[in-house]
Image (tube, rainbow, N blue to C red; front, side):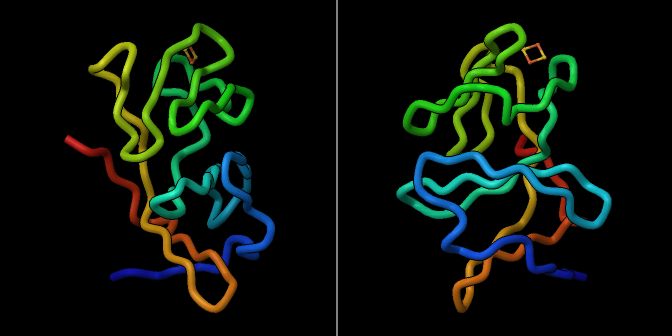
Length: 108
Ligand code: FES
């Protein structure tokens, strides 16, 4: 069952930003891309370093620790390609961004 929780005000997340937050005991970050808002676990799949310490260029996020790269459109690793981010269901409604912290999943 989906249980969306309010996570942030839509106005607090601008395009090109990374917003870290704790929701339902889960460390998550939000980013706003031209195609919409995305939510991912704020831990690099390599060694768990917070991804919000990294650098974002367009939809490409580079981890600050060892420069692994991820496409934030879908959470897919670009370097290495086998890496995947853990993603959460997210929706934007009435000026509020909601996350379902129990919806954790990895794309195949
Ligand atoms: S912890 Fe992110 S690349 Fe190593």
